[in-house]
Amino acid sequence: MKRIRKNIVSCLCLWLFVLTGCMTVAAGTGGIDDGASLLSGSEMAKVSEKLNELVSETGYDFFAVTTDDNGGDGPRAYAEDYFNAHCSGDDGAVFLIDMGERTMQIVTAGKMIYYLTDERIDRTLDRAYDYAADGDYAGVFESMISDTKGYVASGTGADHLYNEDTGEIIKIRSLTFSEIGISLLLGLVSAAGAALAVIASYRMKFSKYIFDYHKHSKLSLSDERDVLIGKSVTHRRIPRNDSTRGGGGHGSGGSTFHVGSGGRSFGGGSRKF
Image (cartoon, rainbow, N blue to C red):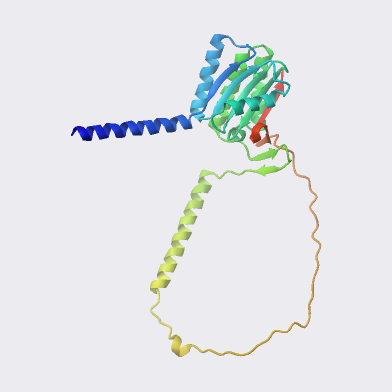
């Protein structure tokens, strides 16, 4: 009896260990790096709380960063390098306040490129601008985090991606629940119909007639040859389509991205203040 209890306890401990490990892998990372010393202790605590809520709800990596020296690389490259150095996964964003260039920068990676489209980023920066102009930098982060949380809750907004490096436009179309349901139903009906037809044909369910191939079949072989006596070739010129594609990812439903530091694809946007 003791051995059974011991085995049960061991199994439970192993199960909890595996479960905890899986949760650790799935969980995102969040943090504040106030390199420019813009936030007070209470402000950092408040921003950290909201940031951790966003990380917990999404499982992605989010960082609120301030700096007064981006090393000459610019706000975007600085934020991208920061994400690469601190991320635990492939999805997330960096909210950066660069005091050296007086710039608010948002950098998105992975799935966040689809959630924070160019239009949504512009709206987020518009709302954060008033806080930055007033010197309320904690308000900037809180506004960005709140907007991001709302956009994630409302679902992905990108219907196309624009590759800033190549100019390529990648169309995206998500199926609705009704379309998915109808497609599955039609697939099941078609598969069932085909299966029943094959089963019925093999079992001769709908006919008892048996064809007497010995009596009715006939084989006749003859020698035939095909001789080429002429050839005609028709040439047709296909006109080239010189129409210009639309603009990039900016505007409703588009997300602009480029290959940044470390070969990772990043989206985002910025605003001077």
